[in-house]
Picture 1 (cartoon, rainbow, N blue to C red):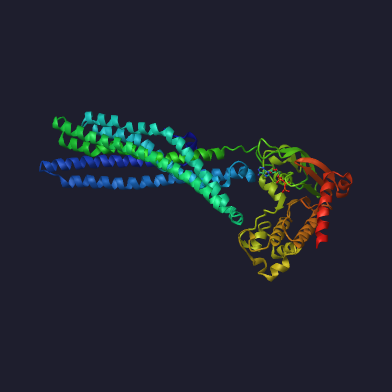
Picture 2: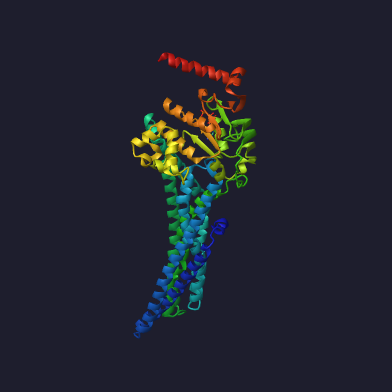
Length: 574
Ligand SMILES: Nc1ncnc2c1ncn2[C@@H]1O[C@H](COP(=O)(O)OP(=O)(O)OP(=O)(O)O)[C@@H](O)[C@H]1O
């Protein structure tokens, strides 16, 4: 019952702690039996006016001390058992995410990972720390009590023993229903977490469009669904506990009635009857405790189902290959779709020779950023071949890939800290001179000198810089990374002309030394590229130099003429 083999196989060292917990609880039970016998004998002596207080005190005190140490020991073993499992599980989740790499969000939302690794694993604490040891102890305890009480009154011992299994029967009865309900509970919880995180991240946008009220209402509805399912879970648990209480205390009452009856019929002595009365509740308490742990453990089990689903996500082939000095990239018959139903890239053949300057252009949504995502391993599951330095990209370790291929996009994140902290991320050993060199190249040095230099503080996301400054700083950081391949994905979008010119100049300087892939909607930026690939809805639509493509007169020439007309119109209008 509720012994999940897979969870148990992850226990490692926890097994010994669980065994310790059971042994210590068993010793505490033995001490309790001894104490009850001593109390019963003392009370009988008292009735007969010949009490033996010193012997009774000796046994009671001895038993209490043993119980004290056993209970403390059991609690500590329980703590150690759950700690070890929590560490193992969190490490397993973390390692799985590393193996999945940047593409993990394709399969599971970040909020869900956070919930599972945080509270999901926490819920399993009760399963390992309390439920599992109690499961074994609850089997041993009634048998031990039966052996202790059978010589006193076989009749009473048998009746108590027969009532005990009614508690696990009642647990099994609710198990199936509880499993379904808890599956729903975790589903609602994860969905609410996802919406909360997304709304929080997009709060500024929601405020701008005054859409926060509607989102608020939608989240309230989700919260209400979650509240309802939580209340259902609590009601189910409470009802189940009431049933178990009725059985446990009803059974104990039955034991007392039987003891009184047996005593009346002179089939049991007075100390014997007292022993039965005092120990009858102990028959049921371990099972009763198992029942209440069961519900919390069941919640952990529902979380573990989700955790295992995450751990079982397919990883593709092992990514262990390391890149060498050659980082030429080639795509052959490259197909990719974010979903199985819709393909985004339809059989592309692309070449990015070592040291070349290649541009990817095409109308919005044609798949340019998707190519960047494939080349940087942010999405997985392409078909065809993508080789880098002659090795299949899907076999290259993520660390090696990201060390050799630097992506600079609008989304390049700046972290809270100083300018130097952000720059040294890319080159931990770089001295101040090297940092200033990179800042000079992107024309940011003068501005930073007017501030606190390399110690200029940045708020989260570089929020205290302008858009252009942020992009320039991201470019400076990328330059310091000094990788053989650079991909610039709309690195100059939405920024001022001066910043755009500085950044484009930086990219052109880099193009002589590194393999550069430039994605830009503005064709004026790509005219100097060695080769330009034109995409049309994920299909190839021409390649060549700027001049050759213009001469061909296809989609590229069309786009160029439209952009030129727009830019000239803009200039005339000034
Ligand atoms: N994470 C995603 N999940 C599902 N579909 C996506 C995802 N990202 C992009 N797409 C879809 O893939 C297609 C190509 O998108 P992509 O971002 O590669 O285009 P793009 O050429 O870079 O466009 P733009 O110039 O506007 O940035 C689009 O139709 C888009 O809807």
